[in-house]
Length: 269
Image 1 (cartoon, one colour):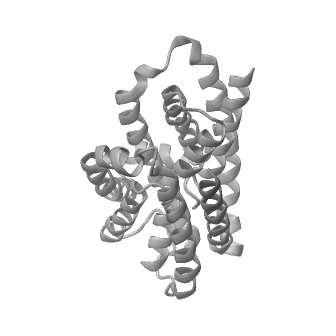
Image 2 (cartoon, one colour):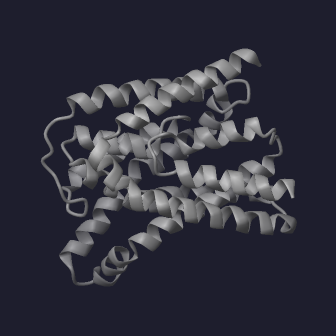
């Protein structure tokens, strides 16, 4: 029963944080630490349930994805959309493949992971508060029709999320805003880009670490997957309207508060 509750908690954390600019990786690692989950299978478990969060985006935007897939042979707009996502995906895919071993060994070393995450949360929160104030007036308002060079620039912004505690959605949304993409369009583009990015990362990690899971974990994986899907579905459905009204500043203050709390936890332990 304890494992079932653990699976539910991790599913909720994954679903809540994957698409918010707060760093899902950081939150999952901290949650694992607080729950005393030293078994590597729980690390692999969090990788698997990311697929539930990915599926929530596909479920919400399935008409868009279906239109693009069926339109690729004949529709220039569909080909442009596909090219945008592929071009934006490439920088993080290449850099991630080159650096993932170093990141896991150095930055995610158990003795360094929490301080690295707390520092990234704090600096990220400050940057959100500062950069939201100086973001230029938007020029691009359509998430599915950005210039290809603009998509590439956003893709380079996404590379910052390779650092633990730096949010993928935060890096891409804030980066896109600074590149004069309207905030709602930036968020929607981030959701589109999440599908190949998260799918690629999850498949790669599962290829390396999947052996830690057994048939006995299938029920726990199913629970975590479903919980992550449901929670992420709700987040994605409401996030664009939320940032359209309040911007990213609430998340900046949240990051600062959680960073200070984590620094306090580190000091006491």
